[in-house]
Length: 269
Image (cartoon, rainbow, N blue to C red; front, side, top):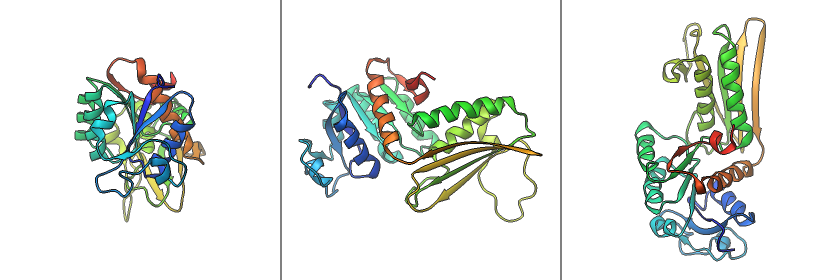
């Protein structure tokens, strides 16, 4: 049992954190060795299973990531940009695989993560599900096949608590569309329309974010031309798809050379 890769979950009290803990504990391929929360959080010092309202799991919630990472083979991290950047450096020190599902990362954050990846394996993706990563591949291929007579719009919907927009998945899809078209996304992107905006810019890739209720994640890529529309769609009805993908990434990275990877690498697409 002890030869199974040890996994640490950051942001243990969050929706994804708790789902990840359950997924690791239910797996026959990994074991939970740590759960991290911010200093002062009510869960710190408690058994994580008890804090989640269930049976004890023998893992105490800690606010010391360095100590936890030192005894782990992988860290799964769906938190916030500032925390993720810090965790990247600490996971690299521990030579632990760092699986990053955090979204809203800025260029400076990505640069620091890339620096950490020189010393350890980092798997980073805006979405960990197989279906979404297939959708990314399809989006790239369709965008490459259609010219600018087809307007591209990315529409995403999430629960009311999501703090970043567009979602990381929407940006993945937009990047795939831009790659297919052979254009730079930062030049093609159109993220806001309000008031007298004028006609749609030819070749633009539009983004629209919907926030409401308990929507887990819905993403559409619309290719619209005169006389016809093509819509590629993915709907997530259970967060476990992201947790299973993240655990798969943590296990996949165990024998890989230091570097930055994504779910396309993990899934062999």
